[in-house]
Amino acid sequence: MAHSTSRIAGFYQLSPSERLAKVAEIAGLDDAGVAHLGNMGNLEPETADSMIENVIGTLNIPLGIATNLIIDGEEQLVPMATEESSVVAAVCNAARQCRDSGGFVTDAAEPVMIAQVQLVEVPNPEFARLKLLEAREEIRRICDATDPVLLKHGGGFRDLEVRVLDDMLIVHLLVDVRDAMGANAVNSMAEAVAPSLAEWSGGKSRLRILSNLADRRLMRARATWRLDQIGGAEVRDGMLSAYRFADMDPYRAATHNKGIMNGVSAVVLATGNDTRAVEAGAHAYAARTGRYRSLSHWEMDGEGNLTGTLEMPMPVGLIGGATRAHPTARYCLEILGVNQAERLGRIIVAVGLAQNFAAMKALATTGIQKGHMALHAKNIALMAGAQGDEVAIIAELLVKQGSVRVDVAESELAKLRQR
Ligand SMILES: CC(C)(COP(=O)([O-])OP(=O)([O-])OC[C@H]1O[C@@H](n2cnc3c(N)ncnc32)[C@H](O)[C@@H]1OP(=O)([O-])[O-])[C@@H](O)C(=O)NCCC(=O)NCCSC(=O)C[C@@](C)(O)CC(=O)[O-]
Ligand SMILES: NC(=O)C1=CN([C@@H]2O[C@H](COP(=O)(O)OP(=O)(O)OC[C@H]3O[C@@H](n4cnc5c(N)ncnc54)[C@H](OP(=O)(O)O)[C@@H]3O)[C@@H](O)[C@H]2O)C=CC1
Image (cartoon, rainbow, N blue to C red; front, side, top):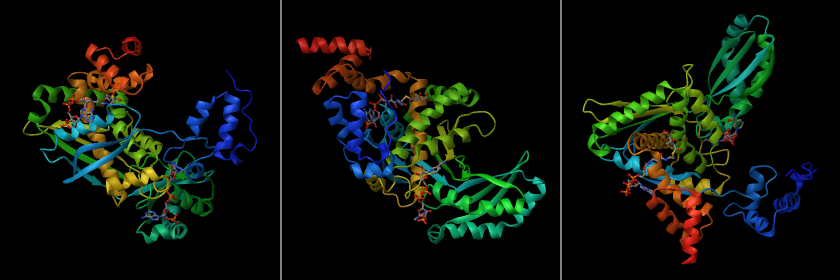
């Protein structure tokens, strides 16, 4: 049913509770709905209200901890925020199976982000391109002057690329953003330097914005799963065949990479980082050869063990965005014990690889539904209306019957309540 109006002048100037009252009136929410949405959980209304616009409440997402991970020789607990069952269990499961071979080894490139400046109506783009490249030091001076704090932390302008796209010139500012995700930092630089670029090129500047294809800020993770740990050669070969399928077929690659992002996005979200930025970068990177492919690579080593690698852009920070503003994100960073954005990125890529291993193994053996649906059964029980102890009882019944469905849950719940 359409609402009576969506034009609410000055809505943004109200407090969260005033906005909620207004929405409740228009949408016909009852007292229980208002009370529920008005409970802001562990995010203060003032904090939420300064993070985004038109706030009326908060949405709690479960926060789980991935166990069993060894990353670069260190035991590592990892907070993951996700609404999807079996994602956390999958990481624990994969990490347990490579502990005997040392866990995950990671690596990272410098934290360099790209800002793009679009120059249009450039009369002689090839000529202007060289002029801009010659002005590198002047460009450095203008960019670095916009962010002395970043400079103090060892970051700042690193290099310049100029591309000719038809009649446009696209300038890439390569900026070391240290422990920030970097969008605001590089956007400010792009805006500051654009008038000079336009003048030197003889054109006009248009867009000045970060590129989410953060292909200079790559992070890598690798691990070996011993044959005896994963259940033998047949399991390994099934997984290698699953990988080949993903690498050759975009329909499969999209799902395979979604599995990787199950792990990646959960840690990105838990730490208050920008999930969309990481996701956009990951998928653009997966398509960099002109064909959308698997982000991970799977092989067999000389001893027949399964080896996996994952290399992907990882624009995450420990400062900026919601990383410091959201108290839960701050505590997640405390649990992680990281003091450099680079370490956070490495951990995230290791989690992505673990997630991919678990999903591929399940797919290549029992099928995804057995493990996933067993854990999803509690959600189904909740959907059927189970409460308190009923949730676990109904979930167990569904798994035992091998039919994790809402209609079955409803009929089991009715029977349980008649007893
Ligand atoms: C679900 C499991 C882990 C069961 O796996 P299992 O072999 O039945 O579990 P197990 O009881 O033998 O336990 C093995 C280990 O898994 C962990 N584990 C086991 N159960 C739990 C639990 N409840 N909570 C936390 N951790 C759990 C735990 O670490 C445990 O070791 P332990 O600590 O007992 O020594 C397995 O089937 C699995 O890894 N499945 C993959 C699940 C998955 O990928 N889910 C993502 C959602 S599906 C999707 O969106 C992506 C997809 C699949 O489409 C991607 C793609 O297509 O590539
Ligand atoms: N396309 C995209 O993905 C876009 C994303 N965004 C959003 O931008 C936000 C991230 O921007 P970001 O620039 O990272 O955040 P901030 O601008 O909030 O923080 C970065 C700033 O923190 C200061 N700083 C202090 N210590 C450090 C350190 N050790 N390392 C680096 N910087 C330090 C720097 O200088 P100073 O104090 O002088 O600022 C730096 O510029 C996210 O919320 C993202 O969602 C925004 C636009 C586009």
